[in-house]
Length: 187
Image (cartoon, rainbow, N blue to C red; front, side, top):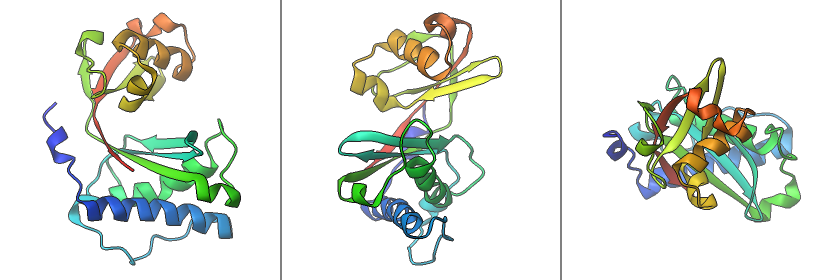
């Protein structure tokens, strides 16, 4: 994939995105609403680019929410603002973040490249690629870091996505369309 080199973020851009995510979550805790993204931040052209992104929230090093989009129709900075709140409070797999969680909370932002269709597990590079499966009307994804953190090989990565995300048999990936993408992880 040749578009990974476009995922270069300065320390300032990284700090701006993480601050926007943090502030969106803390504002939501205070008011119960997603506030308008303010003009307090220096938003570069990189942060205005339209890219897919996932925001993951951890409390005490344990995942507490992860929500994202592959849509490339909204500027990155706006997606991070909205998705941070959704990850912290609306991921139904976890209880919402509370005020007492803030001191142990960490935010991870995964900025995505475009997806590329591949023909099988031999085209998946563990540690580099995330996977996106399309099986009929069902779609599912796992970020690149999931395979690394769990010590998966490419087939195990696909099986995990099929069972845990598509909610199908572990072999369902064999009938699915397989796409790969890369992610620039900011934390």
